[in-house]
Image 1 (tube, rainbow, N blue to C red):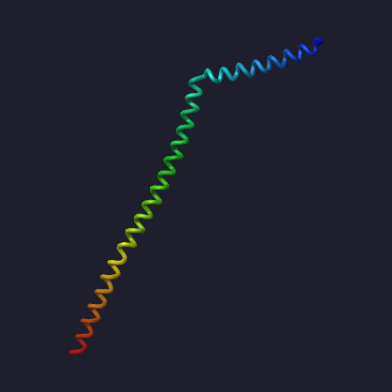
Image 2 (spheres, one colour):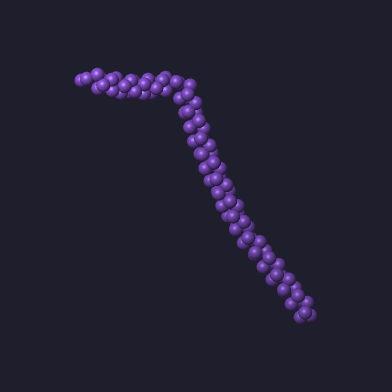
Length: 96
């Protein structure tokens, strides 16, 4: 190897060593890693909370629609009974 090749090899080694040191420093920075993990978990929890809230809203809407549907039949039957009784009363009065 001649001098320029050795110089290039030294440069490549320095770059590689610099990258390795940066990676090790990042792994050693526990506070930064903890903050990043906490931010990730917070975002995940917010996403789950929003999904649960949406599902609860959807389910409550279904329950309300179900209850309204159940209330309509008795109401319709009562209204039909009132109309029938009213019609009978009117018919009997006219008959006299």
